[in-house]
Amino acid sequence: MIEKYDVVILGGGPAGSAAALTLNNIQPEISIAIIEASHYEKWRVGETLAPDAGKALRSLGIWDSFLKTDQLPALGTCAAWENSIVRDNEFIFHTEGKGWHLNRVQFDKWMVNEAVKKGTTLLTDTRYVNHEKPVDKKRIITLQKNGKRFQVETSFVIDATGRSSSFMKNENGQKKVYDRLSGSIVFFKANKAPSNIKAYTLVETTETGWWYSALLPNDQIVVAHMTDADILKKENLSDSTSFCNLLKQSLHTKHRVEELNPIEPIKILSAASMISNSIVGDGWIAIGDAASTFDPLSSQGIFKGIRSGMFAAYALSDSLNGDQSGFDKYERYIQDEFKEYIATQNKFYQMVQQWPQSEFWNRRQKELQPVS
Ligand SMILES: Cc1cc2nc3c(=O)[nH]c(=O)nc-3n(C[C@H](O)[C@H](O)[C@H](O)COP(=O)(O)OP(=O)(O)OC[C@H]3O[C@@H](n4cnc5c(N)ncnc54)[C@H](O)[C@@H]3O)c2cc1C
Image (cartoon, rainbow, N blue to C red):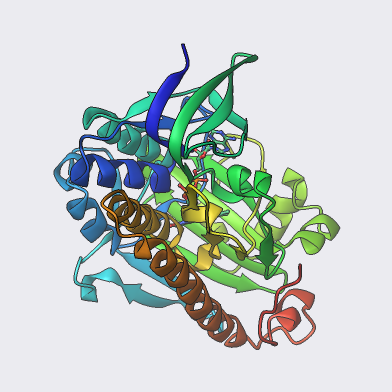
């Protein structure tokens, strides 16, 4: 017997869980399944939860539960951006007062479990493989668990697979890619939180790109160097000796991890800014990073994902009640949001003028345009 769900959400990151929670709240009679490739065992990237996310978590009805998790308050960002002087941007002046530094695996696991508590079915270790065209508004999705394929049937698919946008790509969708930003990411472990680290994210520019670092729960410190993929390769930044040598040349970041050792090998990840050219299709919608991705400098990716999951769920709920207009509005919203983000991004990168010989910064003195 093939399992049937009204809505299948591919991907149990923050965007997928927010969509499920919203549907659980406003349309409790419909059946929802989240299909998640992992069982939330491996590290995940994206550690700063922007203060605005508090409003979204309250609106999803999971704020009190969030406060019981072991995440760390984040009081702001210190940035040596357009010159070497560190300036503080305090969240205290924000209506929410603070953001959060997350253990991302725990956060994502907590959020998906909140959706499960409200009635969502969660299939972990289960990967979306492909799908068929809808027949009479029903669609067959092929999944894989432990090497075995099986199928589920649904009326609506939400693509929340993150940067891979797996469903959207199988629909022949493409992405407009604006840069080749990539991160070399290292986690350090301290026996206890080092006294020289405040509850702030530290951002610092260098000739090759920029650094960010933050203290995380469990006395871990994340340190990431962001540059373009070709420069990362040229500087050999997937090699820990080259990474540590470059780190030693930083003015401020190096002091956060003095005498500490990396706990895991370097991870290399794309952090390119992209938007999908098809965000809504026949019986499906893309949310979170599957729809558009922002530079980590914005610290907006998780919040943006949660918000888009909520908006997409409202559009879907309206369509189930006979009003199809929400899908167009959603697509326009994602496009406008991205346009505004690119304009802000240009402004921030163009502020950095102190490395006239730098390939990385020279590329950013012009307006970002799609590179593919
Ligand atoms: C270096 C770096 C630093 C960042 N720092 C920050 C930060 O400080 N703050 C911030 O807000 N954002 C940050 N981001 C961005 C943030 O991590 C993402 O925007 C956010 O995770 C997007 O959430 P999502 O739910 O859309 O996708 P994801 O979090 O990527 O979740 C996608 C889910 O889908 C699952 N999946 C993928 N493929 C399949 C498949 N075929 N079948 C089933 N499941 C699948 C994955 O296992 C995952 O659980 C950073 C990104 C990078 C690259």
